[in-house]
Image (cartoon, rainbow, N blue to C red; front, side, top):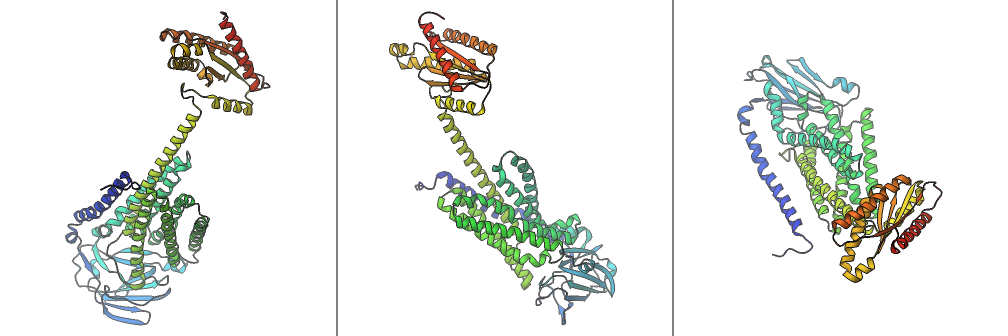
Length: 568
């Protein structure tokens, strides 16, 4: 089958490789995951306390309910939920710990009416956030057969519509099980955070050299923020004994700030479209997101409105940004660049993964249902997106380097004599203009004229004449290039402009020039090269480059006449 001209074989191979990598990830990640959890059931003994609860939500009382099936209507800040049940007469565990999931609530826990645990009431009294996440509470065997009562006092509106599973673990298994249950978010979160931090440190120094690394910096910062958000959102960062409210705050901060580097990254693609309406829309979204993020974080810092209450507005902004980014990449596809196609794939992948987790989060928070059992889709999508962004950055950087190399080649070709490979007349004239503009105080102009070139061309042919011209250029470059520039002015005429006017130094170079001519004639049989020259210097700062050049040229012709008449 013939591949269309518009789709190169290299592009097809790239697409095949990307598809292969994605399929391999889908196939092998679950297989590797099974190896880690093959003994999960036997190693995770715990006591479930999900059944037999009497629950009071506001004025409503529910008897003998199971937490897995229990749902209730919207609750508001200040509402109280009370849970009560009789504990089993035997735990079957040596040293128990109660794992209880808190969602924006202060908690009091009682055993037979005696308080054994409290969290968050002091922070609520100061109108501070209490956060969400797992709490691990010491639960010794002496509590067996007694009455457990848990009182929740909500600190935010619509924080949840269901109660999470309550379990008792062995102390040594509690955190291990938390990490095992969230193993995929743990892996991807750690990878993103470490990768982002390392690349960020490298690119910070690279930015001091060139701004072309700004997109790599954005990639690393986005990766780092999303890695931290993943570790916080899935509670795995709790293994570092961070306070629950600090973990929640870090979760919100990283989520709110993560779109900022992505917005900066997109500027180049927006600018490439050269459409005023798209540019204006981009700037509006960028300003709105930046101001909204600063405003929400400021309100939280002043304990006026907490991030948990503004999360839905930030989610709307994130979705709007994603839709706009996808729109920009689709528009860029009109330019038919494979880079844009690749980046669009990444945008679609991360949009799908974020939509997956966003729907799951909203269903869990507002409807009390776990719609999707798989955890960590956003983290997995971000990893795929990061790799695509790196590929796009590398391809863009390579393309720019090739363009710069091509431009340098064209510039060099424009200023280089094709036969001798030294500078040409155009370069020499522009160099003289720079001397005039800089008012350089000391310089020397040397003019050269290759003798007998016409005779050689007429007698031996132009190929022999070309050898003579190239030999002359080589001798002049060897003699004077270290002190300035040399150029071919055309035909048999050459010039050297030295960055010195010191007579002894110029005399030394002229002497070396004569020796190099003799050496070249000895090395190349039958060459018999002869070059007339003359020079003039400027060391007072008042002379004009045109006059100095004319003086050197006149002296060269005087020297040429003497050489023709048999003098030196």
